[in-house]
Length: 106
Image 1 (cartoon, rainbow, N blue to C red):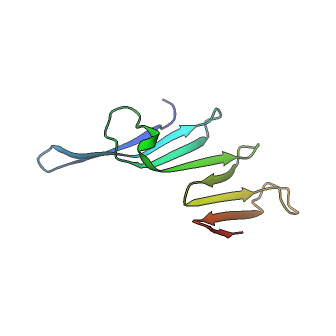
Image 2: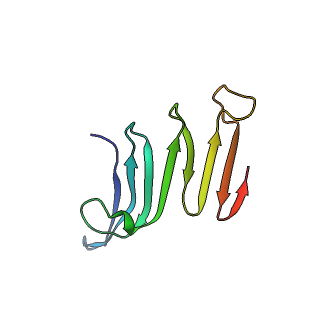
Image 3: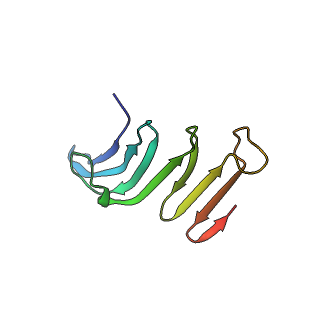
């Protein structure tokens, strides 16, 4: 069956005729099966995978060597999870850095 690669949505009127079709999300995975890229908000109405250029909001994910989520980034928001920085080495998140449209927080 595999991983979910795309989400499609259609709106049908009261007369049973499809009024609108959209692809709210499309997904790409790395070799380990982890979510690598997520594309959001396409208006493509085709039947296959929508072209990446038709999405308004691409988001990228990165992973730690142990498979833990290391960070996520997009044009508006990015976040980094730190596991081994500081005095803890038990796998807990020790700090989080994030940036939102130009402002940075730790």
